Length: 160
Ligand SMILES: [Zn+2]
Image (cartoon, rainbow, N blue to C red):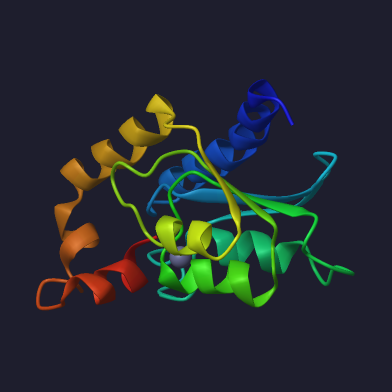
């Protein structure tokens, strides 16, 4: 798949992130595609909206896609590097490829995924970087509240 195609997939995840922002949530979006780029499911982080710390963008997109025959040929696209929880989802279901908008605000489990044979593409997309950085700057309490007394691994669990 060509870089411009990855960007086209990322646009769906960005649209989801913006939807989350409008809802008052953390702007992180994701979408699951098949290897031909067909959209299977899309979603965004709903931790604030639904008071559900387990509803991450990747989880939401994964659930919306419903049950798939297999995941090796699927592509998880997300605006931010996946946390440990979502990296675990990728490995549990053996999703073959992960495309991330950025890993500047948060690096998550990218190295771990790569070490375990998952194809990871980091687009270092400026729109994704700015979208979340602006949110963190304006809403430091939402971003840091629960993690104030936590070590970094817990921060990883809570934030993406
Ligand atoms: Zn996550």
